[in-house]
Image (tube, rainbow, N blue to C red; front, side, top):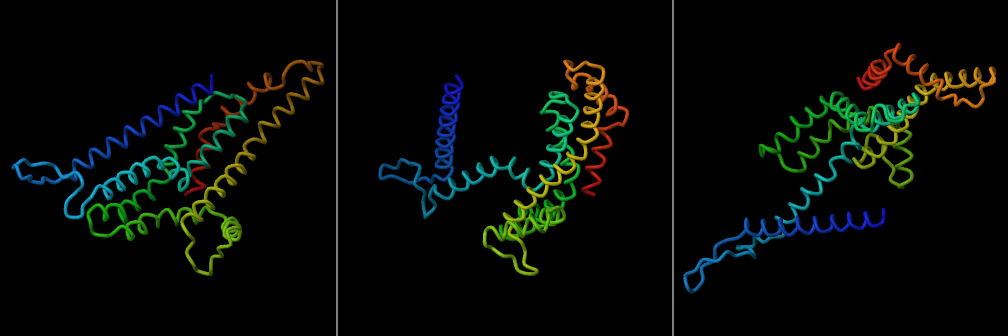
Amino acid sequence: MSSIRSSNWDGFLVRSFLLIAGTALFASGIAAAQVVPTPDGVALPDLLGGEGQGLSGTVVQLFLFVTVLSLVPGIAMMVTCLPFMVIVFSILRQALGVQQAPPNMMIMALAMFLTFFIMEPVFMEAWSSGLSPYIDGTIGEEDAWLMTTEPFREFMMRRTDPDTLFMLSDALNRPIGEGEQHPFSLLATGFMLSEIKHAFQIGFVIFMPFMVIDLVVASVLMAVGMMMVPPTVVSLPFKLGFFVLADGWLKITEALIRGYA
């Protein structure tokens, strides 16, 4: 059944892609068409383009735009603190022992809003220094790229471990000289690895108090002879009560935000 659903989904994706591509080609051809007079005086559109203006440039730009839109979620996870937030909140939920509370959608929504709250100065600086002048036509593509990515470079450099960058550059046999700027691909990869490392470190610290509660409850149950009772069932109310009394969500969120301040 899963293979049938997978094949149907793949066929739907292929048909959708072909439909979008055909529509884009037709629309771009009509937009680039020019009127060519015929000997009979009937004006026909020149779908092949006139005066050296063909469909290739428009089609390439269209596909590049669609590709960038499809990579936006991945880019958001590469250069922001979103992976860090998601990992920490997922480990916290697992430490509490409640597998579906809060649900995945709520954790992702909370992580996204916290990411926007933390990254808002970086977004605004990238917009004012790079994107807005490029839209106004005052700078070119290369300058716009450099000015837009510079705030993200500064943010990622503050959170990236130097040892991670050295390991990656050494593995690729691309040594970085003293004072030389790191390539954006290398910096983004090192930033993601560093964020995952920091998230698991904080997750370990969060997990320890709840594991102690599980061990104490298991020891008490074994001492009174209730070995058939699952310790997680008994320890869950104690962990929830401890977390609520400590105002855990607010404390952990405050600590994560202060780490980026």
